Each structure stands twice: as C-alpha cells, then as structure tokens.
Image (cartoon, rainbow, N blue to C red; front, side):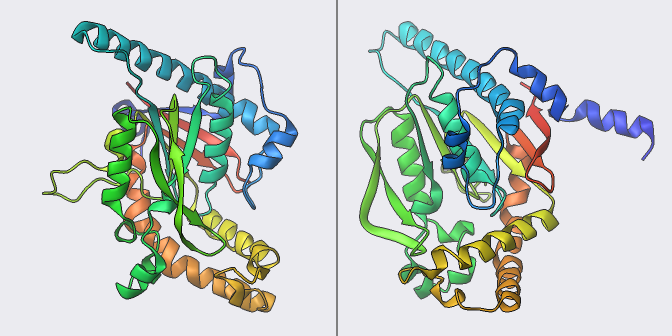
Length: 317
C-alpha cells in the first residue's frame, strides 16, 4: 500500500487514533484515586493491571466519560425544561465488549471504581450479560452447550427488557445472577439496579446488531458509549490457556465447580483441553459474532502481548 492510499484510508476513518503516550497526555491533571490494593482487588485472573496502566489509559478515559456524562445530563435537563416534564433521572449506559480472556471484567471494574469518584456520578453500577445466559438445562435441551456465549445462548428479550427499564428511569430493576463456579445461572438469585448515575454493561456480544428484518431494539441501542477491547488472536488464545491452567489449580478443585473434571488432568492434557475449548467455541464465536462488532464501538482499546494497551481509537463525533 502506498503513502497516498494510507493517507486516504486514514482520512475517511470514523476513528481518531492515539498512541499510548498521546492518549496518556490527555489525562491532564486528573488525580489518581485508586491504590495498589484497590487494583489488586479489581483485576481478574491472568489480567494484570498496573498503576501506570491506570494512569496512562483509564484516567484519561474516565475524564472523557465524565465530560460526556455531564453533557448528557445537561441535555436531559434542558429537554425536561422544554417539555415541562417532572424532574427525573436517566442513567448513562456504557457497554464493554470483546473476546473471552481479553480482560473485559478488569476494565469494567476499574472504570466503575474511577467513575464513582467523579463528583457528578457517585453511583456507578456494573452488570455482566452472563446472568442473561439461558440455564444449562435449557442449553442442553436445545443442543447449545457447545455454543455457550453465542448470541442464541442468551435470553435476549430479557436483556433488552432490563435495559429498557433502566433507560426509562425505573426504580429497583432486577437482573439474574450467574455463577462462574457452577457455570450456570443461579435459580432465585438476582441483583437490583436502582437508578444509578452510570450503568456499565459488560459482555461478549453487547454490540451485536439484530438480524435484518427484525424491527426490535437491540442491546447497543441503549448505550450512550461503548468500549471494545481488542487483541491479536494468538495472544487471546495464550491468555485463555494461562487462565485455564491457573483455574485448574484453584477454582476447578472446588467440588461444586462445573469444571472439577479438569482439575486432575496432567499439564499436557489440560493445555490440550484448553486449546480445544478455545478453538471449538471461543475462537469460532470471536470470528462469527464478536470481532465483527468492533467497528460499532465508540472506543477501541488495543492490547499488546503483555495485556498493555498500545493504541486507543476514539470514534469521531
């Protein structure tokens, strides 16, 4: 590709791209409000995050989001005044998408912690779409256990209904609870979301649009901002294998664990099993459903092999 083509491609891109250092400079004087102890509690297995990463990447992002939220709140109040409507509150909803093992959970929790420290957004809540997976009994009956995490394995109508109620400002909206230990939805358990300032929604397929011909809302219709975490496939596979091997020594040994059968595998057999699961299920889902949604995100964070964000792409307004 020659220089002219590269420039033209850049000019028509919907994103403005930043190197790590360029993005870090946008932090301005935003103070760091998290300690090393806080970060230790927030990070997921095999998803290390440093203070330097928070300062360089997540403080500028929290500053940007705080500005976006304030502007949205101002627009909502202006609209309420114009309509002569009663004062209300509409949560700002942020979606976080990306592959299995890319670090969505850590990103979501760090953003929740940072955003809750801004003066205009003290109440920030987080849900994952795992709770909206169909129960294992249903997946087994429908032959979908090998497609767990694919769009058809979720109760999409329930998730859309949940978000519609949140966006309508309804009080005490409930969502189901998922157990990663038991690898299933927990019957009778729920979390309650009560009109937060910000709601973060984390999940594999949250940016996936509906199929053509279906005139119904889809999940990302309710998002005010969305983040996609991206990494090379080889890195994603290795991170998944590393996590699997570590869980084999910890959570898998719990008698209640769905994956208890893997705990006593040899190292070689465990790695082979992990790579098989990755290829059959997670890689296929990435190709068919997750990666194609990257271009729909407001912000793309691209990770290098060490889980370090190397590039930031922000959609132009």
